Structure formats: structure tokens, C-alpha cells
Length: 219
Figure 1 (spheres, one colour):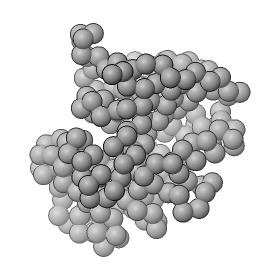
Figure 2 (cartoon, helix red, strand yellow):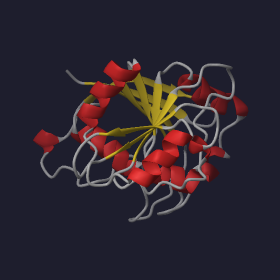
Figure 3 (spheres, helix red, strand yellow):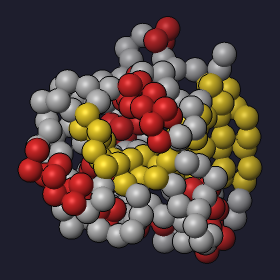
């Protein structure tokens, strides 16, 4: 499976204007053509994955508004299934997979979700096992290309398990700052350079409102 991190960030790597805030205000800096680029990229992949916090703060649809019948399967990992039941991804006609853990599963909620035709997977005991998840998504659902739209902790987990093949960033020319703010990759991080994940620059393309940066996994 090809996994692409896709994100909109500031110069200093922030995803929002503050901890716990929505990323939607940043999208006001893009024009319609920029938004269309994001949506059409969704039309090129089989699946799109975001974290539970993104669902709670942004409540996105995660669909492709610009092309009919080109919507990816939406995958939402949540260790304890504390996802709002009124979320758009659980209440429209799109296909959604909720991924949780053995110790975090809630049978009542799983039954409620399945009544809405939302599929549920158990991958991992205390934390979601993303390597196992990728394998199951490919073998059981035919997903061979995955777009990961964060946030920072989800991105950390897929980087930590060495699953990222490509990084695509729409970098806005703004500085946000904030020590507690969400960045492209949060989590524990690496304290030694030898463990840092290495990528090579594949593309740098200045646009009117942002710079497109694309990196490929270094072999």
C-alpha cells in the first residue's frame, strides 16, 4: 500500500491556530482552485484517514466535492471509540471504517455503528496497530493507496511504524507559533538522529497562496 501524508501547514509546521482548535480557519487563505486540488487528490486514492480529534474539532465530510463517485473510503482510528455519534462521517451515504482496539472496543457502540452501515475493525490491544490495519485495509477492502490527513498524533504513529511513502504539504506563508499547538508530527518524537525518518525532496512548487512541497521516502 502507498501511504501519503497530506497536510496544510504554516511555515513553522502548525496545523491549527491553537491546541484544540479547528484547522478550518487556515483554509480561508486558499482560493477555490487550491481547495479543488485537495479534493481531487482525494479522488485519486482508495482511502483517507484522519484522527478522532480531527473528527471532533472539524467534523469534516472527507469527500471529493469536485468529482462525482470518486470518494475514498474514510478510515477513523480511535483507541477508545470516543467519536461523536453525530459526526458527518457516521451519518451520510459515504463509506466509513472505524478502527479501534481490543481493550477500547464498545460493543453497544459497534452495534449502533453497524446499524448505520459503518464498518468496525479491531486492530491492536491497547493502541491501534497501523501495520496490521494497513494489511487488513489492503487485503479485505482492496485499498492500495491511502491519504493520511493527520493530526499530529496520528501522523506520529504512522511515521513511527515506518508506513509513510510520501509527504505532500501545502505550506502557507504564515507563522503561528505556540508551544502547545498541534504540529505536523507530535507524539514522543526521536531524541537521536539515527532514528529520525529520512525523506528526499521530490518537488518544490510555489503557488499564489502556498508552496507545494513533496517528499519521498529515502531508500
